[in-house]
Structure formats: structure tokens, C-alpha cells
Image 1: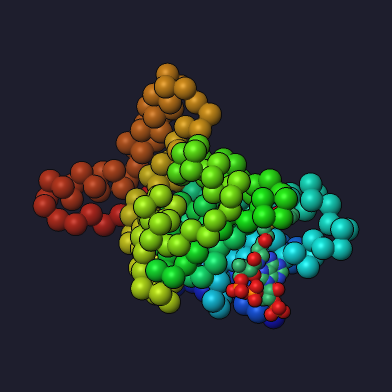
Image 2 (image 1 turned 45 degrees about the vertical axis):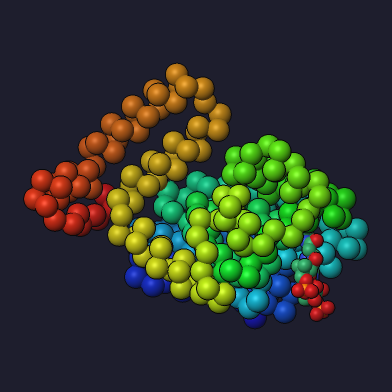
Length: 255
Ligand code: LHQ
């Protein structure tokens, strides 16, 4: 069985973690396949990505059977996680995670690495790391406090409660809720909408947001001016302004 399934729907690439009998627990081969799938997402025909899990869970995090033998070198193994987290964050197009069921540990971290999250109303988020005596990894130390603030991040990491979807929405962990079982379709619809947007501008938005984590105000203002110069010379900018003046919907080509 392929550890990751890929479907392309026009300009939307759908990537599905595919170990449903293990709640899409992440092991070496799945992470390697996910990295390859994300490389494919770099292709020009793709303008948005949906990341989801097959079966009843998004992902239960690291495969604890793989970890249990004591032979897994965590530092070395984390290079696989780090690669996919960076691939998602650096991908110059939007990534939407569709979360059904559980997103735990590194599985939750993957969902947080995405640009937006749609969750089924019965989804549950659990940081899980401290439950087994581990610190957060796969970027969660970075993404979680930026998503929910320090105090809430500490609470979620230290006490590791099961956060139901409605609460996740209140906390800003997810952007939208869907009826149970419909997160995939909602995420695909959202990704289709994003795929019709000014893709190059979205890449620049991601670049600016990524940089904002390490820049002060002066440097941010400078970077914004640079990014705006690039966006301002794009075809999609010309098309957006023309569409406004002609009172019609813009037809963005992503260039
Ligand atoms: C699993 C797993 C799983 C293997 C369910 N592994 N089989 C750590 C180390 C190294 C480097 C990288 O980063 C990390 C970070 C992490 O991700 S740490 C966090 C790891 N994840 C967890 O601690 C969660 C463990 N799983 C659970 O607590 C439960 O399975 C949850 C709450 C997710 C779901 O519970 P249930 O709905 O009751 O399902 P279940 O427990 O019956 O699971 C179904 C099957 O999936 C079962 O297999 P079986 O053969 O008994 O039917 C589980 O063993 C398997 N499974 N999670 N992480």
C-alpha cells in the first residue's frame, strides 16, 4: 500500500496520508513519500495543495511502534520531519490541511505547518508530546505560540488536553469547521478558490509571513517594499486593477 496518495484536480494537488489502520501514524517511509509528494507540488501546474489523512484520523503523530524499539535516533529522524515542515512553509503556494478525527503530536504539527486548516466538527487536536515525556517538535514550538499565544501554547503543550474542533476554532487553531466527514470537500473547495487567485502574490505573502518571525518593524517595512515591487510588476496585479476599473471579476493566471 502506498504510504501517501496523490490526486490532481485541475490546479489543486491533493495529498493524503495513507496508513488508515494506524491512524496515519508517521514513519520513515510515509515521511519520505510525503516529501516526494510535496516536491511534486512545486510543479507549475499546481496552484494550491490539500493535505489530509485517509480513514478516520488526520494523523496520530510519530509511529510509536517504530519509536518503541529504542533504535530510532530522534535527532536524525527529525530531519525527515523538518524537511516536510520546511517544504510546506516554503512552498510558494497555499497549503490547506483538512482535519478529520485526531491530529496528535507531529500530526498536529503538520496541520499547523499548513497555511490554513479546515476541520470536521468531530476533529480533535492533541499536542501529545508531553504525555510521553517528549518536547514539541516538527516546528510546533514555533507555530503553536504564534497561532494561539504563549499561555495557551504552554497549556496545550504541558497538559496536552484533547481540544475539540469547536474550541480549536475559538483558539484560532483552525480557520473553518465543516460537518463531520466533509473537511476534505470543504478544503478542496477552498483550495480551488485559492488556485484561482494571484498565486505569485500568495507566494510573496508566505515569504513575508515567514520573514516576519525574524524581522523587526524597520526590516519588515523594507521587505514589504521589496515584495510589493515584485507583486506590483506582476500580470495579476495589472489584471486585478483592470478588473476593478471594468467592474468585472479578475481572471488571475498566477503570474
Ligand atoms: C498507532 C499510533 C501511533 C503507532 C494509533 N503509532 N500506532 C516523536 C518521536 C520521534 C520523533 C518525531 O516526533 C515525535 C513526535 C510525536 O508525534 S509524539 C506523539 C505520538 N503520538 C501519540 O502519542 C498518540 C498515540 N495514539 C493515541 O493516543 C490514540 O491512538 C489516539 C488518541 C490518537 C486515538 O485513539 P483511538 O481512537 O482509541 O484509536 P486506537 O488507539 O485504538 O488506534 C487505532 C490503531 O492505531 C491502534 O492499532 P491496533 O493494532 O491496536 O488496532 C493503535 O495502536 C494505532 N495507533 N496511534 N502514534
